[in-house]
Length: 64
Image (cartoon, helix red, strand yellow):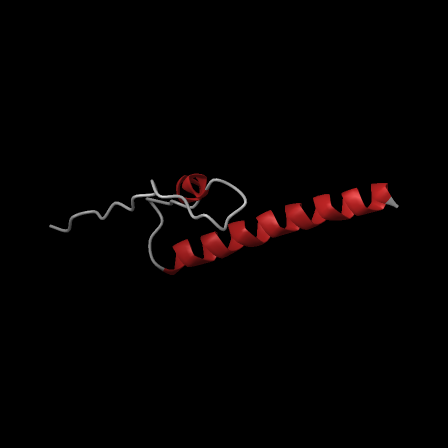
């Protein structure tokens, strides 16, 4: 029987502007296996980038 590995996220990553302990729960998909987990992580990262870019464009548009 395989034992589940647990990733400890108690130590923060200092160069991130946000608390890095929140990243692991957001990107943990216990029921997703294999290549689907990779594609799901990429999709969520790109979606977060789209939201961030949209907010940046709105701020730039309001500033000008």
